[in-house]
Length: 402
Image (cartoon, rainbow, N blue to C red; front, side):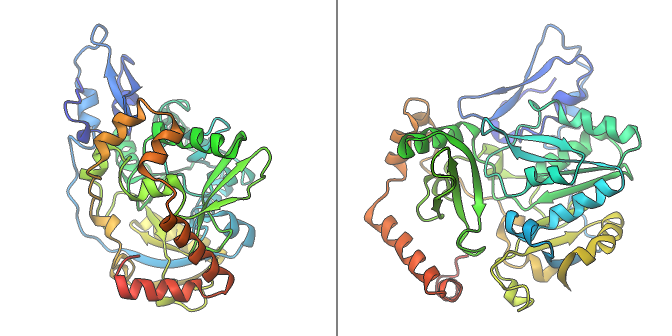
């Protein structure tokens, strides 16, 4: 029987709930807003299936193998504009759909809940574009892992994208490799709390005095290198654009104050992964190619499998790309191999989140001070003078911060 005695030992992948033959495990939200397995002990038969598939109880050792590495930018300008980085996932997903497959990814629902769904048309791939800086619900959208297995057993090609822990959880649940499964993981800083995101929505709806239709966590309104939070309401139609220096949600996320406990002791941060592809940002594309350093977005891709190599070869004409050495693209990518440290105020923050409304919470921990306003103004001035990229390069050189 799966029992979570320490929160850091559960990533919320849902493999345990999906594999239970008696369906006696449900995923329940704790006081911090994260989902954890809860076992109905009256119907549990103590078969141990849940423990056997837990990717944290059975951590797979990292083993080295041959990889391929690319920097890519999707040639489709609409896809590129809507994507967080270079539009790599859309090209991989299209490959699956064009071979009669289905694609699983994360959308932000009309209720502003991040959850896994599957789509079967290229038009619907737009629902997956743009990062979601909040942990996705793999369970509530319809028992995702079981849906994946059902499609695989029907012989259909399945493309599944998620965080490294979700990929490892899915693979453990499936118990064997499927040739018709394509897995794509993202280099993940951490997964923030859905509860705190609800507080952010409450904060913004009060501040903007309007109902929020949707949110884009990484919008390219000011270009890729100064991507911003874009809040779209009934009235403003998307005129809110604030960056990591001024938007309360981005400030909370990058301060590591609202992450899942397991993210601070992550077992899945490594270069050699079980997925077919690992994808993530390439803000410094100019180090590899001047052509790709155009502030439209670029994606780093690590290809881990022979299957992945065949797929990339089939889709490479969808990209402007260069091939490079794996060690070159992982250099400086700390989040790939190292867990972020928890903010020392994390415990107090969550205690306050359970007694304060969104405005009170974010004003206490992330107030809009003169310094915040000044940095935002400086960034906008640099953007309008068309010197933002140069200024950012100088900042990185002087501070060694990215």
